[in-house]
Length: 425
Image (tube, rainbow, N blue to C red; front, side, top):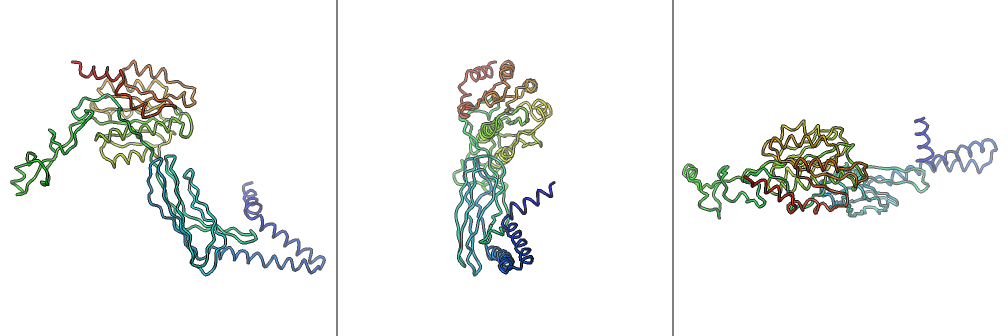
């Protein structure tokens, strides 16, 4: 059956004109020998000459072409636009009457296909800009040129160069008033000093530079090296923050941009950005088809690594959030803050968070309301269990603005109660 389908596609779909021409040739030649009519012989000879000439025409149309695709970047953020330039040059002595140029890609909204003609030695160049509306890994290229003959008997395609992949990061939003319970370490104040200021934690020395304060000079090293050396300081100690993303397939609802998966990924990126901008060490943990882990570190490069995980995240896991928290509980020490992002309505994972809280781990939950994304499940019971366990929880619905839903925590009565509990003797 598959062989018949392939033959049908080859002869009656892709090469329909050539099949019709072959049938006419056979009929004309048969009737010519049967009747001896001279016109049928000439028709058969004409077809016999036209077919190879048409093929040669199509081949010459592809000969002497040079196609390049200049791509500026291979990593972008959701909402940014790609900037590519496609250039086609004719290096031959023959004019190209019909060339269909394409740069195939699975990036949504990308349209590059264009039909052009070129004189001998001529070229055409144009810019292609595509807004990256969805996170993920996409392929681009290689550029292709398709051409044919005037009778439509042959359609030939040639590829030029190699393809490339582009990674689109999820877009993180600003969370100016985001709050999670702190471990009450010195470096966890809302406004923190940078490392160029003096702190109690000296980490090393370096050569003196113009503008350095004299009270930072380390005299023993200066005497030993015969050069002015100043002390380097570390930030005050602060707890590590772990972002745990629930990617179990059966707990997510919705599709496209209006899905709990996309909301959860965007929230995880925003929370990681918030703490890394405050120079906190952030770790990332998720379980989908593979185990995704980034140990808690600081810096922009670490943020890029977390975004790479989030760009490729798919809600296709088969392990429950409760199992993930139980298996990885050893990673979370006493001075650790865990932020869980999930739409799950299963109360088992709440028990896992309660166990972490009893060990001194600070926990917070960003709970997506699945019923607003088209799911029959409701998070009312889970939210009640979290409230009864005194676990700080954000509830996010599909119609909510994330900046407001996650940015109002600092002003909530729950935060005031948590602060009073922290300062209570």
